[in-house]
Image 1 (cartoon, one colour):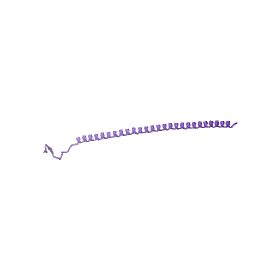
Image 2 (spheres, one colour; image 1 turned 135 degrees about the horizontal axis):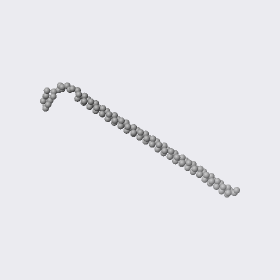
Image 3 (spheres, helix red, strand yellow; image 1 turned 45 degrees about the vertical axis):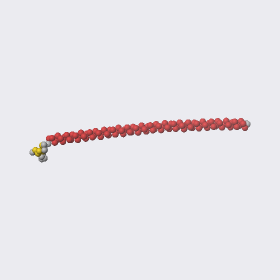
Image 4 (tube, helix red, strand yellow; image 1 turned 30 degrees about the vertical axis):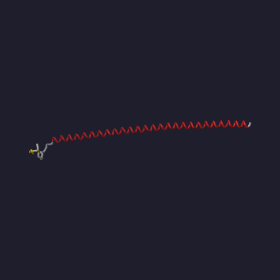
Length: 114
């Protein structure tokens, strides 16, 4: 084998080796990019699920707060009604109790009436 042929074979081997290394590097790059895309998609799904969970939790809190406010309003209304009924009962009771004559002097048109 002549030195020229030997150099030609060495050159061909080097080019073939470099092409294979390049293919391996490109395959690794593609594999890493695919893994990153998959991870990004997975993270988006997790974030979406967490946001939905928090939204659901906030909705439950909002509904509970409305229910509590309605209950408070109902209790206040009942308390006002009970208070009004007590006043009405006192008025009826006072109307039925015989009144004692007033010890205060009565005045009509600025004159004392006895």
